[in-house]
Length: 115
Image (cartoon, rainbow, N blue to C red):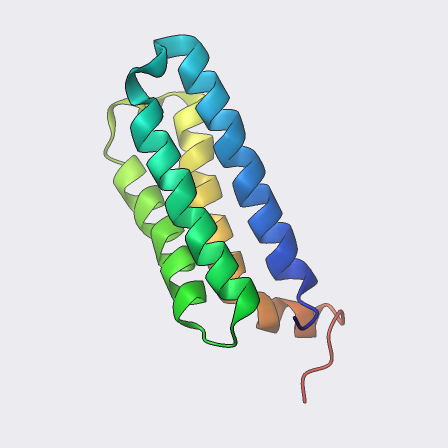
């Protein structure tokens, strides 16, 4: 696996936020929404393993698209007026962009040599 610190950081942040959300929702609503949340987590884990184990950018594109679409759909959800909803919308949009453009970000801040 090549060195991709921004991508790894974005993926770690994604997994941390997802696990925290699962715990918060479980504590608030119970096990009612647990199957759909576990499904989302498994989908993301599949994409993450695909990204980290292959050189194809399809998995990267799908994970970034997942976050951007989640952020856009979040704008029109019931909880989007609450502060946590707005934070999650921003998180999804920003992390989607960071994941997709990690190479460019790394080259601009001097972490990685492109060439």
